[in-house]
Image 1: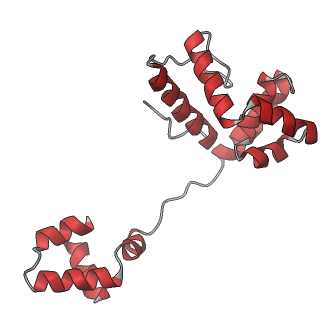
Image 2 (image 1 turned 90 degrees about the vertical axis):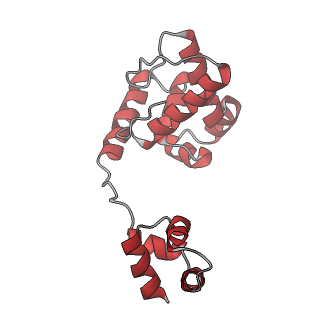
Image 3 (image 1 turned 135 degrees about the vertical axis):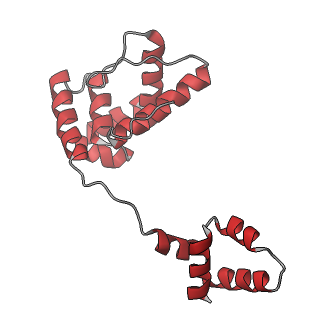
Length: 171
């Protein structure tokens, strides 16, 4: 399975669920997407329908749509992206294809222009994951020859240099 890391989040989720349906039915996947349109392959269309129904059921969407025709409100109701709601509304002929493509392009632009996180601070995450108490017990066990340095490294998942720095600063 391949999930394009440069794809927008809703695309990644859809791809993952689509692959799960392929696994469940025991059929290989073939891809032919442009503007999130179903492929001309019956298996692909089936998988698309399953994922769409899983994310936003037709019955529930029709009920919610009678109360609000605002797709942004529907995204909050179903806790999915605006693209997913727009796709379902288009599939159910509640909006036309041009409106779907407008919403798709608007949201793709927003998603692609989001600043990319460089991730968290490794040292701070390690400190949260390995509590001061745990590190103190580990240090004591190592110095008492109850556990080896090698096992201490394995338990923490750290490299030696960082392991010793962390033990020294937290105990």
